[in-house]
Image 1: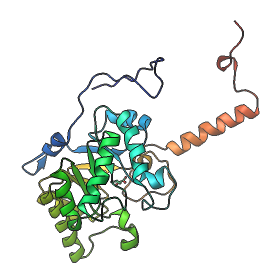
Image 2 (image 1 turned 135 degrees about the vertical axis):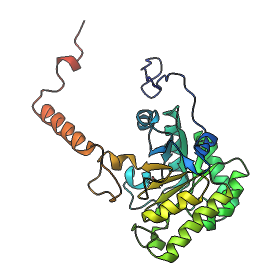
Image 3 (image 1 turned 30 degrees about the vertical axis):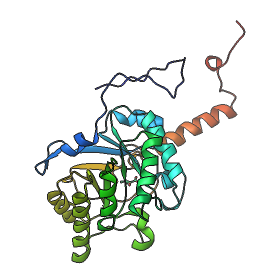
Image 4 (image 1 turned 60 degrees about the horizontal axis):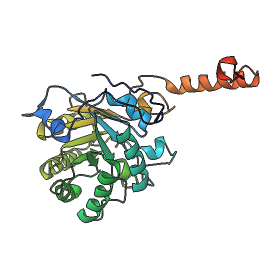
Length: 289
Ligand code: KIV
C-alpha cells in the first residue's frame, strides 16, 4: 500500500491528496483475533499531529491520540491535567492526517469516570468533533458498566488495564503492576470485565509478563501490550519515545531512532550559518527578474 501526499498549491501543505484507500474499521481490528489467536499482530503508535499521522498511517493498524500528549506535547507533569478540548483538537488533526489506520482518542481524566452518562456525553463530543472511530478509557471492572453503556450506544471502546497513568496519584508512581498474586488476579479480572462489557480491544500497560500472557489467553478481544509481552495480540509505543526524543524513557521502550540528536544537530547547523551570514544563500533568496 502506498500513500502519496502530493503538495497541492491550491490547498496547502496541510491538505495533501492521498491515493484512494479504505480505512480499517473497528470490527476488522476486533476480528484479527479469531478463536483466541491473532495471526498478524496489531500495530499501534501514538500520534498527536496531522503530519505525524501522515508519516505513521500506512505502517499502523491503529493510531492512538493518547493523553500522553500532556507530557509529550505540553510538558505537563502527568496526563491528569489534560482536557477534553485538548484531546479533541489533536484527535481532529490526526484524523485529517490519516487515511488507513483506525484512529482512537483517549478520554482524559475527569471526562468519563463520574457516570456512564457523563462518559457518553464526552465520548459523543469526541466522535462528532474529531471523526475518530473509537475512544479509549482507563480502568477495569469499575468501568465495565460505562463500557457497556457506550458500546450499546454506538461508541466503540478500547480498555486500558494494569499501569493506568491517570491513576498515578492512587498508584503512587509508574512502576510495573501485577507483582503480587492479589494484584495479578485483580488485573486479570479487570480485563475480563472490560471484554465482557464489549471492549473491542484492551491495552495492557506495565504489567509483569505472565499476567499479560494470561490476559491475552483469557480474553476474546485483542490485547495491545506496552511494557507487557510480545505474546500480546498487538503492541503500542509512544512515538516520541521510540524516536528517541527524550533523555529518559521507561525501560519497556525500544529506541528505533535518535531524533533528538538529529534535531539538535540541525538547529546547531542553522544557528552557525545564520551567525556567519551563510543562510539564506542565493537558492533561498528572491532576486529581481
Ligand atoms: O496515552 C497514551 O499514550 C497511552 C498509551 C501509552 C497506551 O495510553
